[in-house]
Length: 396
Image 1: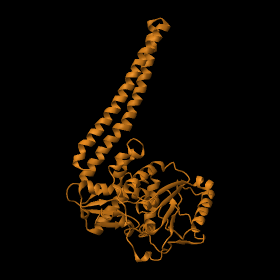
Image 2 (image 1 turned 45 degrees about the horizontal axis):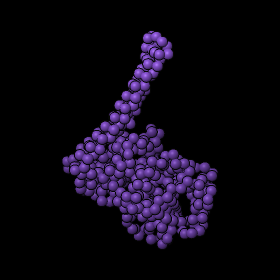
Image 3 (image 1 turned 180 degrees about the horizontal axis):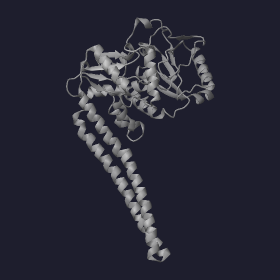
Image 4 (image 1 turned 30 degrees about the vertical axis):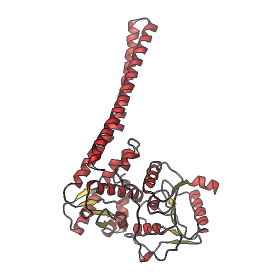
């Protein structure tokens, strides 16, 4: 987005506000006319002024309550989102201004949100404000430094500062406190930034925290803002992974598989049996490399298929500090990715890898599927298919 676009955006916002205001005024006018008609009929039926006044008074009270509720909804779903977006964008503009170094993160939560929203948001941020990568330092965990290539000249991994046990304990404490999505910078996030700055010799940086991205997009996820708003504040270029000598053991053609427990695929006997059948049938077509890590860094646990013939795994080929980098490089080399709908399933199409994301429960997926499909279409990503596990079992 450039300065030239600002008048267009202002006009569009004004038009939307005017349409919403006109709608609510028309609703109020209809209510007012309805009150008058009901009062007139009541006066004719009762035959006395007292009865008509009493009926009209009751109708007026009810109409006032309805109007008050509509006004509250208007404020909650229209005024508040616009007001918060303006405040967040002003904050982002202040972070971008000047010449101070900028810390991007730290990102310490879900992989899916990182690849589908955070990294594209950072690309928009850098392009929108014309910030040179030398000013930017990305902070994440698990070694996905190449996700930030072209955005930040420097990358620091949280797991290079803290052990995996401490990281897992802090992640569990954050979930217990109800801050799984990093809505507000926690004390530990501030400590990470301070330690990163000490290690790198950076002083007095501006910090673009994930919480600002969440605040900017949450009204899209809640349905109060259009998808277009999110797409105007993200950029989705195709990605390419670096090649590493450590990946030479991979078969020339294979399927990368990553199934883990969570709301989309809850750990039940039926789910385990269906996934095992799926992996066994896929292994008859091509070799399989499973991306289970065994590290236990978050609340998700990998489904294991080591006893299925033709299945290879990554055990012993990664450390906590490198696990995401290794997994995503393997995905980039795959001919097909099959896994839980979420996490690396959002990344694989961006890498040009055909993807099948399986789910048993899509209650928390619908909005993200909507975003992903539009983003993939824009960036000409590889084919992405989301499949209901129960439906798959019926036709397989």
